[in-house]
Image 1 (cartoon, rainbow, N blue to C red):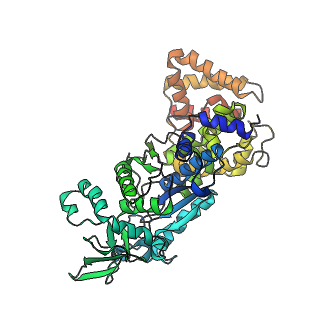
Image 2 (tube, one colour):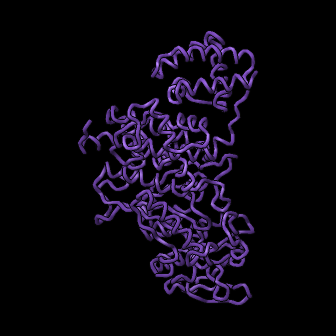
Image 3 (spheres, rainbow, N blue to C red):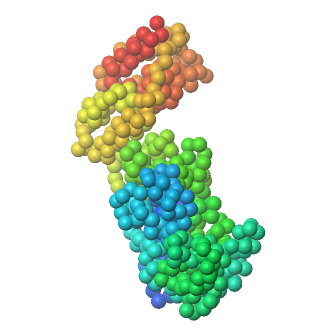
Length: 529
């Protein structure tokens, strides 16, 4: 199916896929394009107080999906900025980094002025920023990395900082009613950096000369200090900082998590007080860990991108991030196999879908348009069951079994399946094998397994998976009754595979081989003897 750009644009204008819904906000914002032909600016933010995790990556990915959707609707230029708030003061020592005692000595200092606990970069922020860029680059994102330190110290924010000082009282009027009484007493939109200790100070500030950028404050030693707020000698409270960036950079779109709804509102009011216009935005739900707690950089309770990519391909991660962004989702190792198989299911459907359905198919947004051809002859779940039964195995051995099921099976013919074989071996080794327990069947189950074994023995060589599945189904219906087929399949999973869930057993038996499958049954029956 070939679609022209005009067809795509017409369908995108009507698509209910969330990236297109978001992109249409920007069309409404600038019906005639941004003034002077300036690019529509998308921004994502990162606080490098902890190691970047999939939640960080998720925001860049989803923003990029909106940017790509906008490109289908408009020829206007766009740009994406990945902004690192590395001037922020370190509030607490993260749980998942080395040399915590050293970091504790630098609490309160800007992240870009704290030694790197990993010993590989000039600062803690530089290390974490490098990690961020590394995994953004791995995905091929088109973005400009911006460091708060570079922009503050280099004077890029000086004019905006002067405007903050001019509008100091208006900003205070916005922020103070939102704070607890004890916080109001010390709150200041501007945070001076102590000339004595280098700490980002949370102290009241007096605006001495807004045009010159001069402020005064009482430092840690009780001395009144007058100094410039420009050139990296101060930074802004983050809600004020966020608003200032929107105005100074001309940000048109930025999404944020549900936990920042109030912050978006307050920063929007501050942006207007500074004479700017808040960006369009999107509120997404948070990723949760296996215990249902919000993922935190400092706790390190989320998956790293390296962990996901050890056990699943890049496309599965992008697929997981795309789906249901307004719904809280658990993010842990157990979700990877389902994400892999769901991705391939949607990818297989894409070529035969009409254009409107294609635009709503997650893989359209994963691949930013045309989706690669190809389909998998087996599911990732089935691969996991195979390698789980095999125990310690090599990729070559797995391909040997795949030959029972797939004509001319080879890594060269199915390179994407070959990638999945590697992921399956790693996942089964680390997460499946330790949990497997093949229980002994009871007398009734053992009798049913014997009947199944007899049926398998009578099948012709090379029997199709559907024929094997029919045998499995009919055996269960005869031995357990149609209403108790669920118990029959659970028996097969628990006694043969060692798990409470499993694949279509006809497909598994065909993949594992009839003779090997009969040996599994014999071993199970022997355990119950």
